[in-house]
Image (cartoon, rainbow, N blue to C red):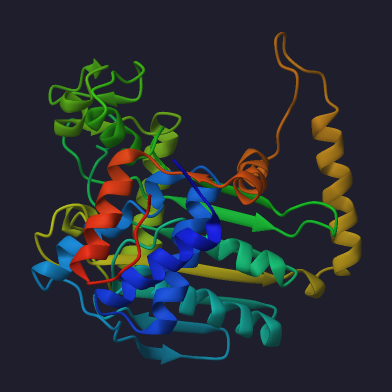
Length: 347
């Protein structure tokens, strides 16, 4: 079924508040989740609410989120997420980073002791909208082995970088995991009883597999082989180790309430104006993008996209036509609405 973004936000706000978050937190989380769904990243959308409710049921997440700024300097900050909502902690860190970059040119804020922060482009676009380059990275539960190994050691450890677009074009937004695909795509294939493409993952013996069940017991393939492994390692060091959070196999999954996840994040904002006039930079980025789009295309390719462009167009379609929500997610949302005694329903 298709649901308007405003309606889905309204329902999400009700659920998050009903689970114990503050009204301000609920609005922020709803904005993040709905934007992910609008952009076609449904693995980071409102389906998250069921996992959140499961954690609330066993008292393994703190709501409202008890954020605490542990250290702060002119250009840096360190936040303890208090085992609360990851979106709240990451938003606060990027906000601090932007404010510090406005004063110093660069702002870097780390987060420790938080949970899944969701759709990373949500935060880097915050910086891009302020005329800055936004960078964010976060670690996750072990799902990928060191290159040449068979034991899950690193998370998918995603990274996002966004640069400002001009008034006519959206920001260029790179948002990717260190693995070839996000683990959520494997889970979705398993749920739908579909096979996965060869090369996405390995089974427990380290052999490539098309069976999502075997992949979930095994490991994900790193993006670019040893390069993805190296990227995952460095994200773990910066987001997990440097922040004083968990790292490696110490990070726990949000999908099963087995204890605090210990997720860490690293947020960086860079003020473009400290290097060149923002208008000039936007003009260069626009010209650069046009050159890329106009470059020679491979046979069968009708269009070359910039990072984030497909998602941006999907977002505009969702705004006009509504967001496609699958039956399972609809059922879970209605169950949560009933649980919190809200009269709202998706139908």
